Length: 164
Ligand SMILES: CC(C)(COP(=O)(O)OP(=O)(O)OC[C@H]1O[C@@H](n2cnc3c(N)ncnc32)[C@H](O)[C@@H]1OP(=O)(O)O)[C@@H](O)C(=O)NCCC(=O)NCCS
Image (cartoon, rainbow, N blue to C red; front, side, top):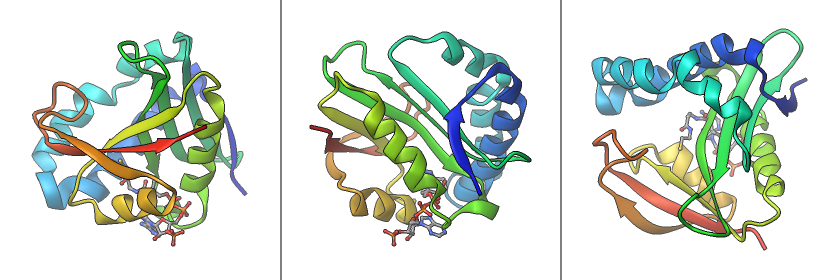
């Protein structure tokens, strides 16, 4: 039974491994394993994620069953747009998908930002399972970016859901 809690420094190695494994499972067929390795080394290194632990107006959470981490999510208020929270990551380990962990993490994020009226995310259009997951949870497409995450050079669709 997984429960959702705030991420801590002790989780960073396990989060990094979870993200790398889930990225390969999700994106090797879309971007190729080499590109996934490149992105993972840059975005998912424990050092890169450490700054999130102290970040204000942000939510960094994991799903934990006492033995292992099954999923991770990270969201933060958009510094350039008032009342918009951005879901930067929502990843559930392939062994644990379809058990409700992603829904629990998303619900926790949606409830965490009291000043936000909109929750925004970027998703790879070829990632049909994720698109279906978000659409079933009230998100709709509002735009497109040519560089997901700001610097990846990977195009993505932008989805939003009203929070209140
Ligand atoms: C998309 C994701 C976050 C959903 O989390 P989850 O824990 O598998 O989802 P839940 O168990 O809460 O809900 C299952 C729902 O997700 C869908 N789903 C998405 N991926 C699935 C998978 N691999 N296995 C089973 N169901 C999946 C199901 O259709 C189901 O939808 P429904 O409830 O509307 O019928 C998770 O599958 C995941 O991490 N996928 C890979 C990484 C990814 O794409 N992340 C999003 C990047 S923007």
